[in-house]
Image (cartoon, rainbow over all chains, first blue to last red; front, side, top):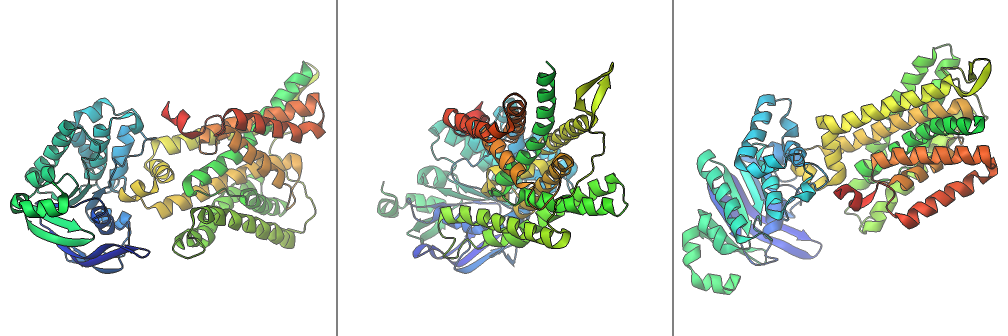
Length: 237
Length: 303
């Protein structure tokens, strides 16, 4: 389980996260919603070690992970899919997936091969295009690829940053469904950052509403979804 | 006809060496984002080590392999002692701007070059010395006439081709090679995939160091060895890398062969004095027609 207490991250004089406290519940989907610039991406980037916080605690499975390197945090079981379909365009589809399991290729040799096959079953389109360069994929396929790259590291916690960004509604639905199924069937913990609050709250168990770097609401997703005044004030619809 | 063959063979053999130098530059440029001007200084240093070993009665091959190893070790050492600390200081005032961050390692590499050349002068004295070749440098004799091709040329070309093949297999087929390519292309995604990018960066310095040491070992039999002899090789190798595309290993190799052949044909058919103007002409033409180099840049990667 991931526990965040009083987390503050700033860039120069700009405070992106201002004393955030929250929890990603085990085997549940927790979504962090909020407008552009609310600090959602910074939250995930601080958890995965890409940004270092000014103060505060991040506790993962009882241990503090503040100050650890991103590559060590992945190895501890937290996989981060950053914003914007983060794949390496110049590498092939299969190389992109394999990249995520490189650090396990000696210790878990047979499972590495099995995990690749699982991804191809999960996203058959990636198998069809396995030899193609990732740069030739559509946006949706790239997002699937980025998620696969994260999943083959066999994470216990998946950090997903705006998987719906720039994708057609049908593709968004497919990807969200997939994440939902994974969480329910394998017990994967998911921390889902979304601007598309309706979609995110529809699938999540728990919702955290972020505004200007502060937590405004932290409630069960259904409750948050029903609260029209919060929605109108912070999400603008 | 004889002149043509002579120019072709000597150009191919020289081009193979420039290809190695260019490849070394490209590996560090892609893997660590640094144009390493100290590269041939490192090669000079390890060639001196080989030279000293051979003069003290060891076989050529002992010197050869110790030099390759020393080149790799020196490359790794420079990264760990100089380049890594520099890139970790991103938060300081001096390194706050993007252009300074890119410029400082390059300036540091020039400093390293100066230190290496001075050190070599102190340790081995600055006068030129010869360096042995492992194969004959006289032309083959076929049916009574001397061919313009020596067994040393053959040795150079085959050893470079073997090296290029092994390097390609390493980058394309092994996990560490994939980790290095990923680090070179997108460090953030590489780190999020669990790749230890500090290690892969050091490894690219080591591989580049070994490749340029090999170039030093192969070129000094014909050019002699002094603390400054390899400066010119670096300039040509760098031009080759730019001509081929600084971010493309295949382009670097291509650029190396192109420059080797151009230099050789100009030397044979015009005069050695025209070599520099011809290198400059090649560079200008390529930069005007394809500013990213023949195989460089996004356009070619997309194909």
